[in-house]
Length: 495
Ligand SMILES: [Zn+2]
Image 1 (cartoon, rainbow, N blue to C red):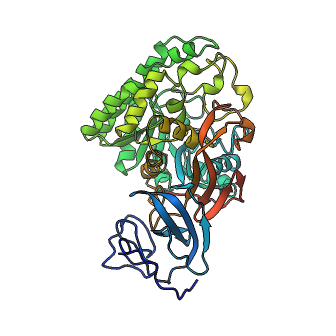
Image 2: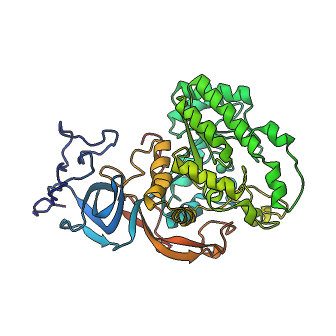
Image 3: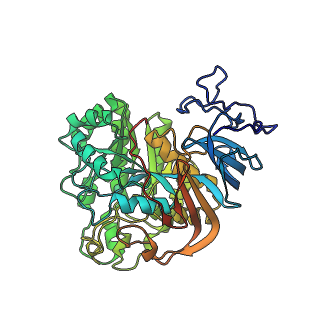
């Protein structure tokens, strides 16, 4: 597109240039972004001088940027954010204006913990259904977990098999975690080189035979290997000895299940993981933290220089053990949903930064595996499409802002995975957005979910925050729950 219009300029902001030419000595923009010559200043403000093909301007009175929420017009060129302009900026000739009024524009969410199960257990979920549900829920990037699919993502060949399956089905961008097993240390470096974002391991049985856990010696071996090439280990941290010592009984009562997965199992596993990470100078990430008792351990480890990050999940932060009815195994996951007081402490951990990120751990199964006996039912909670409204509903009740939610559900997970182009609305990043009506409410109707199986612990709940539309690289991929054809890409580490 060419335009003869003068540059769009804002007296207080238009300091940088955006001229489509390569590098410049003046380029003070975050150099970690691969911005292909699109340049702005450190505040993300630019002027357009007419040489950039802006195809879309997304306008709202409330755009959430790293500097805060403000009225703005986000200019998109080549699928990336070209500029964050004043709300009343002139729309370049040839560009389409999409004015969403007072709806909030946030960066597309990044969900780094999703079990897609494809290929192999596609009756549980699949790339088609999972990415449609994600898009409907405001998520524009997901990283798939290495287990529950057949094959698991534990060799380069298996990764290629999964990529081949995902390619044509991806409605959003999709990346892959690798898996660390007792016998695949030799595969870790090749997987890293092939683009996985890091490696998942279990310290207790995973629930599927093809993905065995690591004992302490095996953890040491894998962690040393991964630290050697600067990789990341993400860990399901429950200690098998504490689990074995806990009372295990066949029961429809949630209290019996909760007693079988005690906090000490998590606390001890995290303590051991911290010790190993410290000794090996390895980078580790605690998956799905449930036990708030571990927060002081983690905070102390950080102060001690240990490279450790932590995520929690919507179900730990919005559901409580006290409310789970007998036999309601749609609430079963491991580690488990704990008491209300534990949840309060997890929110404190979010508020003080000990917990970095909130991701779904969407782990569905068919309804028949959710038997009423908590000891035998499949463990996993489906929430891919509901994470944003579930968290926003609880966050606002507790006095947190949408900026906080964006930090926990987009910026931090993007940083965890090293996704420099995701996680914020600023020039150079991908034009991935969720448009949210934060004050509107809806009641969760399982039949309206795009998940393959409409089993969810959130059924019947009234939640705040309706996702009006979702945009991937400047293309609207979801519009009030109606999905477009798939345009997602497969992501590899550092791409
Ligand atoms: Zn998981």
